[in-house]
Length: 113
Length: 113
Image (tube, rainbow over all chains, first blue to last red; front, side, top):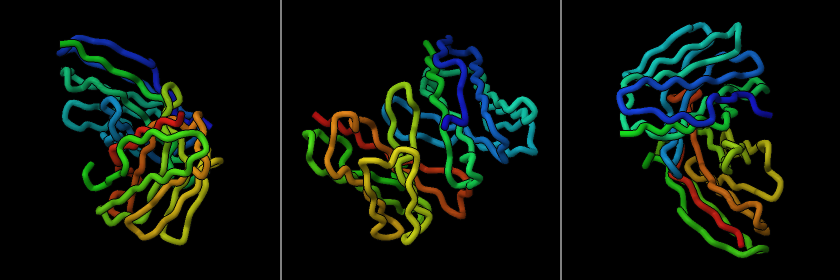
């Protein structure tokens, strides 16, 4: 079953603009992760936020988590053409294991030079 | 991530053939996973293994089998390939040092004719 769902499915912006992607999930979690996938390549872990955290930063990335709304957002500031990729949120499987993840369908971000 | 390798990277096969996809890792992780990715469906878990003697089915295991030959090696087999198994296949690992974060291989693009 799909735990995380990203929104929007696709996003196109100009270089230098900020990009915001959202993820909604269904059941309680103790952490949420974001991954990036360049076209046809393996996923790369970006950031993990735990349920007791509301916001986390890593370079140009800012992730928020609202457990009351069961949602997370990923903000990429001052975007670059190299940020063009698909972005996925991932949550621990609803079965409870932190070591099994369920991935959303992703947001395809295109950053135009 | 060069620490997780997959062979072959591309494979074309015919319906009914048996094929094996191999995954090796040098990260020393005990947990390994096989996913498939289809356009519009995101990543779906096929099988996962928490150690050499612990292998578990994921959400779409029918038509697939796996073998964990060693801590570092996890192979996925399609006993009798069918066209709807055409997809991008990823191996991933995680371990006690990485916690919940998963590290992905570069993927195998499989086409079943």
